[in-house]
Image (cartoon, rainbow, N blue to C red; front, side, top):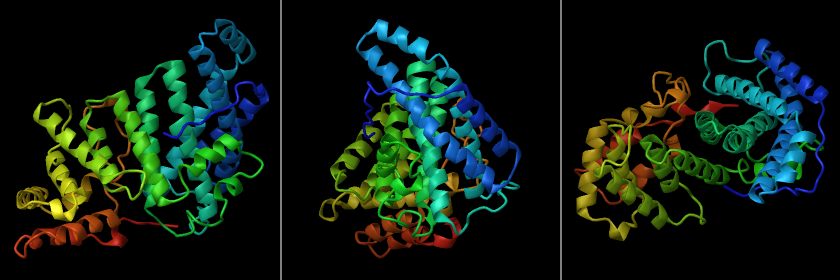
Length: 377
């Protein structure tokens, strides 16, 4: 993840009235469906979440320096920080629930006045929620509560938001101004927040890089949990960025295969090896793809049976799919493993190396249509 640094010498101020105002805003979003209430909560929580993260950084700096006097002083001066973090956490839950409902078109979840044609507003809601779920809450749980389950839940939600944002069918979502992050919360958000936004949600490629970073954090929290690993392998393989060499993705895929043979992972899903074979063929340079690999891919496609089998376990709105074996993630959504465009990209690459009789299996991939899994704004 891109490092976010504060000046530890800067004074941070917030009041009990600020927390009370945030609590009221959260209550209104939880109990009312007007879009104006969501807007009010976003405007309230952004500066306070910046304050919370800044204070967490102060505590972390003092702890790293083993400055016990400074830690005691911070605890006295900012004794209300736990209350602020609790309120920011509630706000993150409320925002995520509303956004998830809108994006997945859950029954009775649409807000009155939902901004289907207002990508700027939706960008603001997504960015504010993402900052809480991927920065503030992970730091809170890592350095204050040591609650791994809550830490994992926050990062999973961040990963979902990142993946869902890439699947929004509106070119203006990412590109409505040359300074989208500055304009989104002009005069409200800190320079730290703007830097995070710019490195997370300003283009599909930036979003994919942030997704990979979030998945790396999840793997660090539970290195043997297979579902985090397969999401990471697919993200790296399909990442269109000069910052990530394809050989890196290939190394990850092959290490995962080796670990699978040694039974080093838990909660391994039936499609895991098949998907790794497909990803290996995708990232391998054309002149290095051997016939044996194409045979493995063909067997993988037969195992998956159809395009729907490839995407269905992670498709939007499928509430029957769970994160296996993790009670803490019960009921949490699992965003798609692949985007529609990525599935088609894989099929295009494999069609170049498959023989005529093998290409029939690729038609299962090509049955995917954009309209089936796109969000309309």
